[in-house]
Image (cartoon, rainbow, N blue to C red; front, side):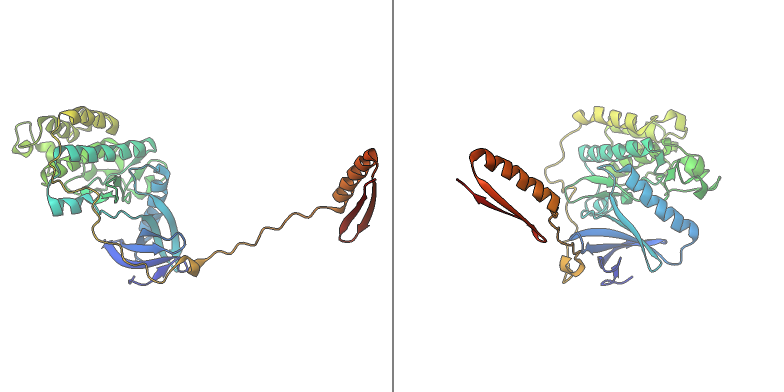
Length: 342
């Protein structure tokens, strides 16, 4: 794909590439019909059938979860063999970008971000979906500073995805993946996301990779410099044995919420989480006029001749009571009524 190309019969005008991976590219696009910016994920043409199936399921899963902290899906389509997904455009980029530009998040801001991510996970788990890829590049931020979980490409959906992950397959992103994902990703449950959430919180607080946190004992230097309450939450989240972790994302969120009042305020010079990366470009000549839907004007319902005759009859009766005379003429165009009052 190149800048200036379009999708969906000219509805989406591609402006600049936002990122790319082995299976897909992400583009900033102008939605001509709705006059707004979108992010469009375009699947590469040469990918295998399983990747195409997973791409379609990813869109359905994200649309089904429908949560304020999950990136919204607006459309999916196929344009000459190119499958694409139209997503909410997150102007402030990802948390990984924030870490590269500004370093570690202050504790209070990091916890507030995690509460949003955990809220999204609670909703996903209610739908039987395990994300399996919690990491800073998959948490995007809106212009208003709202963190939203995205990229459900390797999510495990109890309803539809069982056949897409073979037993014994390792899936996830080191070092954020739970140890059980590295052995049998198909057999994981929501506690794998609890591990990923703990690893993400560690990364946000330290700007260090959460390498093998399940091997770190209580006195390990990995926890040095962390608020003790937060270190305890992360430690339990990332235990090797899933049975010993927080049982759910909701319980982990409750532990973080309890710690929040005792955390220091963010420094006054903390950059805003929702700072846009760069100004949006001029969408160019593509306007709504280029894709206008013309609606036929509404027609007034025709009154039947019978209805008009009935009305005329009522008027005649009324005039007779007051001493008037009415002459009623019925023609092809309707009914004419001439009134003579005495």
